[in-house]
Image (cartoon, rainbow, N blue to C red):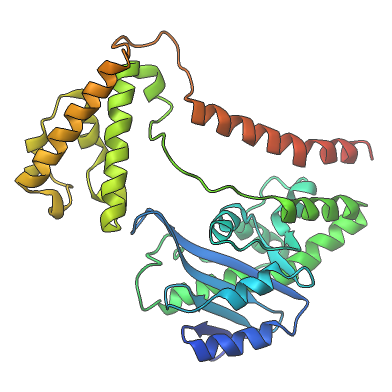
Length: 337
């Protein structure tokens, strides 16, 4: 575990069991921590992969390598402790990932929620740090390859900046909320955040909204089946789906404008699938999909108006329900003040 020189808040890279133990011993001494997660979401590997967990006290920051084979059970226990407040910023996707790993953080404090209740037009962490603390955050590393090892110094520093500044940011925003008489609403929102459970997402609908308008039910079925098949192939080789078969190729195969054997020549197809064996598998998949579509008597005629799939309808309802539950009552109360 090493710290760079000339760093007001020392940053430690944790990638060994002994350094993780030292990290946890230090974190346990504080009643307030901040954390964030860097993950890969189908950019360089298949699915959502936890790559880095960064945790900061007011005095130090620990960048924990999530791919180093470390047992993170002790860290998750700290996250779940109701006695330790955890500062976060817009943590929805981080919490979804943690929940999928059976970690359910408690006593959360979301600085983005405070900024929204204060009616800030821009609530991103970058904007808030610049406006409130005069810190210019470098976002170049945000979309870097977090699966690659070793981590670069720039990646480590970026990860640290995501959490180091949450401590002073909370103080500034909370003082403003207190001065404006909004502190009770802030605390109420934070309690709701800790109580929210993010269900695991099992993706079965791979179509885009435009497909529901421009394609017939039969065409939708064939395309969705091929996109699902591509997703299965991607999972098997731990690659993003777009690196297996480009989407325009999948769409051409579903529409019949491309034939399976064309994957042998088309650029962008993963080398593992540029062989006659895969051509045969692809042909079989297409035949099965067409038979299934025929057995369901799916219309080959495009529908007259766009319609959402059941999965998209459910997602829209959940989003609207969440919005109504979390923010509308509080906004109304604020406006009455």
